[in-house]
Image (cartoon, rainbow, N blue to C red; front, side):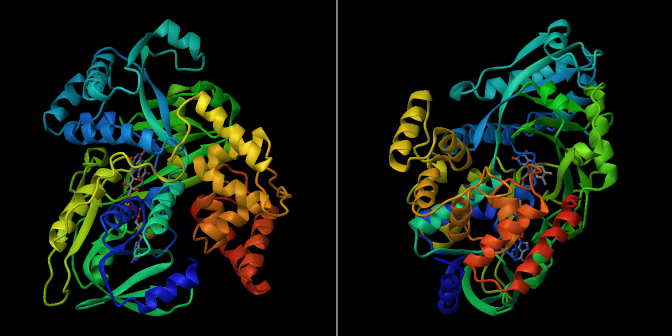
Length: 563
Ligand SMILES: Cc1cc2nc3c(=O)[nH]c(=O)nc-3n(C[C@H](O)[C@H](O)[C@H](O)COP(=O)(O)OP(=O)(O)OC[C@H]3O[C@@H](n4cnc5c(N)ncnc54)[C@H](O)[C@@H]3O)c2cc1C
């Protein structure tokens, strides 16, 4: 179904059991969960799918070692379980991430971390070997029954410096443990939506459609492309608008104060010395203020993060210069001799964590757990509003499951199945080992005649969804893009025709990692714009507008000036 078909369906859709507002990972997870239980669901997003916090995370799929300090043991246990599930269900994008912690003392931090573990407020100071050992031992203990990653180990100062000569020589040693990372969160979120739409003809998802108002038993939504207003009658509304939750409730005529968002920024750095210093691992380290920062190798570059600053209006979230200085200073503390210049920063991004409202000044101490806040039906709204507050990328499935159970009870439906072991998108039948991988490559080479190199790249990009991409690519004349030969014309056409692409920036920011990896030039933007323009029959003016919109967005939100 293309956008025209979806809009036609929407115009005729008078009633729907569930309307989900917001298609970040929490909305998309619930959309899949409910549709699999046979509940027709409509999901809308005022922008593109996964364009909020869900595309601005640190890309860690993790238990959250740091949350142990805040005594969030349940959250850590749930996150570790979900991390392990994602490594199996989305093996094409979620992979192990060895993580090394440089340690600067033996005992410091014990007197601040331990009281926090027991629920007392305390300031963060350097975490010494003892407290790190305690945290990592608990981490290993919680995964003892489903061990799919190695346990932690300590390395002496001498050996650690021999392995990474660039590390600050003031260390007393390092500790290494395992978590996971996700290469394409934007695509995994989209895959949840695509899987559902393929399986279930009664559920609908549409981007660039915003919630505007509530008229007792109906909700007014607006197509931001055409300006058309539509109306639907839901039995339940789910407010999954993350940092926008209270703003959305206001549009629904309800006052709430559920969210106290904090913005977080990241840098993508192209610096050979820094890449070498990672040794293929994440470095997990403290800044001077006690905040944990991270850096890890990311698709040939290094991802560095992050900040954690209270913010009221999510629309104003951008990575500012102070944050860049903060993150680069933090890197200096562990890798003092590596020179990183501003021109090494090829991309930057910022998002707002939809954290629960809290009056603490120490943002790191605000809970990262999720909760469902229900606004009951009333004289103004016939339907209850389920608000999805907080949550981590890692735990989206568990959060969706819990929310779906509450909604199923409300609608008087029983659960048909659970999603614990359901593979997502290109994670279905993803090769589990080298033999399966080479069988897949052989099979695809016979079917398509594409080179091994090309097939390996497509498997990495799309998982087994590459099978559909490849057959589309070889159906007609194909050629590499002039300004990015790693992509081909028909690959880009496949994304446009099958992946809800509306604007040019959807393609370069979320369907591909072209912008994120710092590979975008103005010539490439024009070339890709020309492909969408031709397929969508854009006028010359419309194409100019799209180019202008993208250039402006990249300048404002990502500090990227295209050459
Ligand atoms: C800096 C940072 C680092 C993070 N790092 C990690 C990490 O490493 N690991 C991890 O597990 N988690 C991490 N997280 C947390 C995780 O990314 C978020 O908790 C999660 O993405 C929240 O998803 P969401 O769907 O609730 O919100 P969002 O992804 O923000 O989605 C909300 C959606 O609602 C839409 N919307 C708003 N208003 C309307 C309206 N009126 N009508 C229709 N749609 C509307 C928006 O366009 C948006 O797409 C991080 C978050 C941030 C910001």
